[in-house]
Amino acid sequence: MIIIKFGGTSVEDAKAISNAVEIISRQRSRQPVVVVSAIAGATNTLVSAARLALEGDLGKATAELNALLERHVLILENVVDDRPTVQQLILEFRRRFDEIKNLCQAIAVLGELTPRSLDAIASVGERLSSLIIARAMAERKLPAELVDARSFMVTDDHFTRAAPLVRPTGEKARTLLLPHVNTGKIIVTQGYIGATAAGVTTTLGRGGSDFSASIIGAALAAEEIQIWTDVDGVMTADPRIAPAAKKLKVISFREASELAYFGAKVLHPSTILPAVEKNIPVIVLNSRRPLATGTRIVADPPRSNAAVKSIASKGGITVINIQSSRMLMAYGFLSSIFSIFQKHQTAVDLVSTSEVAVSLTIDNPSRLEQIVADLKEVAEVTALDKKAIVCVVGEQMRSTSGVADRVFRALNDINVTMISQGASEINMSLVIDEADVTESVRRLHREFFEPVPELEIFEAIEE
Ligand code: ASP
Ligand code: MG
Image (cartoon, rainbow, N blue to C red; front, side):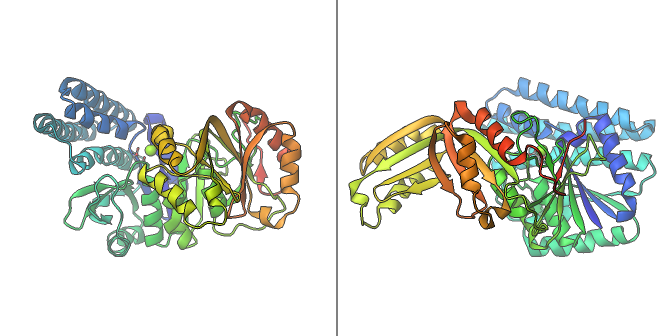
């Protein structure tokens, strides 16, 4: 059995949904369980309607909701031919939207938007997309069985960021889903949504449908989990920066985690943890090019001779240099510094220290002024903005010598503000000026990937 999960862009319109149905159909013999996101943008619209209602702008909220309803109706009419079915579903959609509008009215009147009502509203996107997809499958004579995720995805009551409860979810998923799978049905269910033990609708947090797919896959001991999205997989670099970038056929979970921070279009590592724990491969695939092979993310990929697998970068970084002679041979200094970041709820990404100085980076400067003011009570402080992190990632870096040397030779005259050889030893991060990112990534890509190493793990992206 396999999990096939479609992200929002993979079901964004009638054409995308037809492709999705084709992808399911081709893999029918593998006993797929289909997990779907809301159509692209739907969750944003629903959340924004709720916020508009809170601000008292019911007119705008209603207009946005009407447009979203129209989008769903249009898709439906284009993927389902059977008129009575279409009519019946349109009525059903209208009912759902009426419910949301009523909720919005209550929000506007009370001037209060609770996380619980926000989840009730946000969950509608997946409930609608799954209805359409199940119908579209039935139309192609696929034995679709729509199962509401709220009947088995049991979560705590931390609305808008609910955590699935592994044991009850596993038990319910197996009891409710396996009998269908075993009788040849193709289950369609929603990502992102769940319910508390008492049956109140929750969501797992934005982007949560990958997490859903991973939890369901782990519960059912799936053979693999396919995440269908709109990119070809994980690349050796951002192809907009390094046009010669190649796709990676396989990458380790640890490498994927390092890259995720850089917004490389990889899954967020925590979302695939349940799959990794059970050693279930996760494959990122492009639904616009369904025959391409995607990137497999696995716990232990076969060893390759490539020390470096990917180069990522991220701008908008601020470096904070903190210097104090009090640090020399003293204890407690670092903890006093980090407590300031904690107080201002700002995550620190890279850290490097010497006897009398600490440099660190943050990517969220919204509290920078207060942080610097507090730090100045205990040390000398300078902050440098418009910095970027360039990161070289590869599992084999730890057992390959000379990588650092190659990195610095490639960068040559580019000024490096800070270096951190990640504690994981599979990543080396360099802080440079934002203005140097393109040149740096290109040079590093040339050094490590051009010409492409003759290795099984790299693959050219054919147009
Ligand atoms: N539809 C939800 C969102 O946009 C969940 C997801 O797509 O993963 O956040
Ligand atoms: Mg999404």
